[in-house]
Image 1 (tube, rainbow, N blue to C red):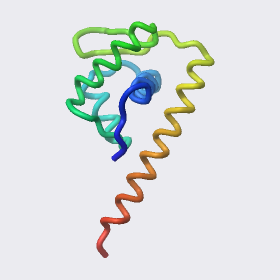
Image 2: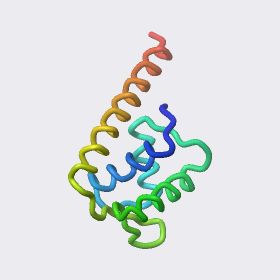
Image 3: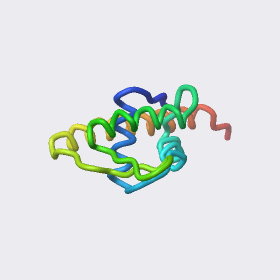
Length: 106
């Protein structure tokens, strides 16, 4: 599992919302964990804190309690976020693959 925090967490969450549409905090946590990421500390708090930052940048909007959706993102920003998240997902996938093969016992 690849730890994720800071700008990488914010970008991964924003990209997830733009890819999949409105989601709850629990759905976002589950989606990122399925992609091979792990959260330091309490995942729901890390996600809500990161989304608060993205709300101030108008990239994410709050739809209700624990429910968020995509807002507006300039094309260049979207490209930068998409590229960084693709690299993060690739590293997390590689980490899962390597970690999985090391623990495999035939």
